[in-house]
Length: 119
Image (cartoon, rainbow, N blue to C red; front, side, top):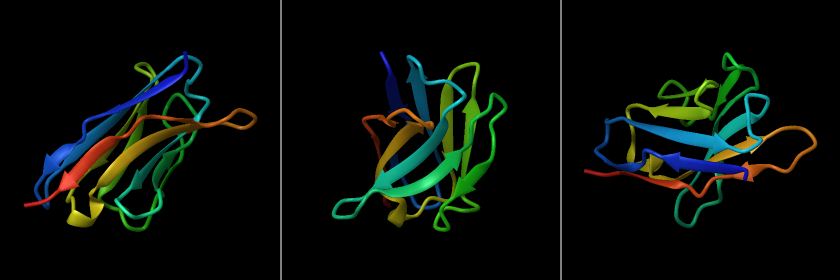
């Protein structure tokens, strides 16, 4: 069964850090591009970060709003993708989703994890 499960969300004060994890199972492996998205209440889902295929991690890319604060990484041995989030701001509050995609197959989504940045 193909599955993506996010974890690591929670409540954090502005300036704090959180590390999200996305655990993949089934046919999802290091050949997939992995992306993080987020969706705040009343807003459309927006792309946050991506990491290319490859056991060693691959090319990374970030939305301008998180560049320099967030880091995406891949652990192929554990089949997980992490999103390290530093210097969090209230505008980072959202449900964060993990996506797996490769050419020729449908994308897969996790159920999301809530991140709330508030004092």
